[in-house]
Length: 153
Image (cartoon, rainbow, N blue to C red; front, side):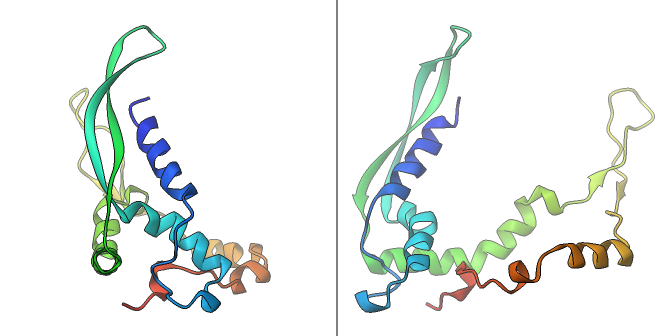
């Protein structure tokens, strides 16, 4: 409930049909580029005004929520600078905040309610890796996907 407004705002930016920033020649604009810009670029083309609002939950309580509103549109050069900065920092960001890649705790400490600080490396064997590679269809492995790494600023 608290983040539904964020999802709605991002969905609204996705649904906007804007001229591409990454390619100025209309003849070179592909469907993949349009989709990439809708997913990644459109939400960076505006100043977002974030305020605190309230909504009533299904339990009848008032809950604080984020209200996001579209502000002024940024210049295309500013958007490109934002994307360049994002590309330069995304690896460090993912390293710090992608919890799926972090080592998981092994269990509880000796005192009740205290988590152990010991960690356990995820277990993967060569057989598992080979089996995973073989189970994926070759078409999927060879499929070219347009990504953030493909863009040069």
